[in-house]
Length: 218
Image (cartoon, rainbow, N blue to C red; front, side, top):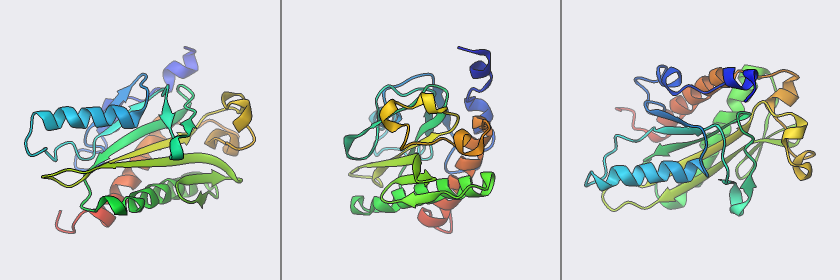
């Protein structure tokens, strides 16, 4: 690992300190590597359910980051390339009071929140490409994968997986993606502080999730 990479690390405790009273981010985990953050957070949810009947809602808002995914997934089973230490690869565990057939509402919420932060923080002009992508200059910079699981005695379980290309160079993308993908660093011609960006993004996700999916008397 280079010195630059060792400095630009996601630190769970520092991230979590910003979200003591939040829904999203009250608990944050950072893994060095996992196959898929969606799979890893689902495993944690099942472990929590095994010791609580009915399943506890305490884990709602859990965020799990990985510095590297070895088997990240996109829509329709596509592989998501997750260069180590270059992007934000994370999943959020939620229990919105919506039906499984309404899961597209979560995808729309997440991609709109991502695009809004990119626009306001970096003065870029992101475009949403339905159903689940955010683009800059017609190249993919971020994607969302929502997976829901039915629950018998609690609100359905939703996992919102998010991948954002942050500090990639062109060479960090596979040759077949170099003309179709972009990173924030490539668009800005400078590197981005991933820790600060993660805080700002989670703050926006928390605020907009509570506005859309949590009752006003929460």
